Length: 156
Image 1 (cartoon, helix red, strand yellow):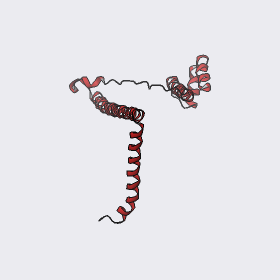
Image 2: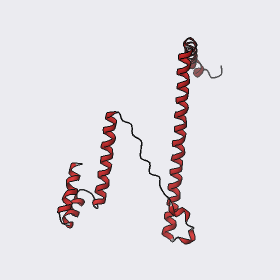
Image 3: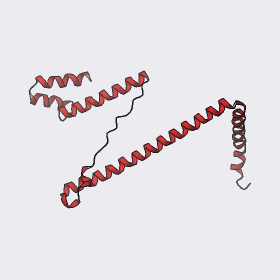
Image 4: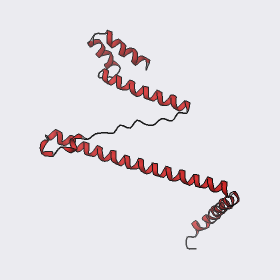
């Protein structure tokens, strides 16, 4: 990161041709690409630092726009139609990811509610909760003990 910062600062003092060569030697087309890489590195550093500190951060959600989808095909040239088709595909993918994310959130909430109910039950009726857990454990043990015989002789 420090090297990239120095390279960007050198760009202010170097002539354009030398600066462009320096960028290309490091694998960048232009300073826009360099700045983009620097932003990604800064984001990774921030995430890592927050992870080390135990801070959980929300992802910045960029809501994509699909302006060509509102324009009729008759008003678009061949390239515009191709871009519109690509935007349609991107929108479908984005909407699918949103549906999956919403489903995961619902499932997470459902599991959280179940856990809260289980905790409330455990605190209110500890003996009943223990009996229920032991019964479930015994059923699992019985099933596991019967499983080999079921696998060996499927007709029984």
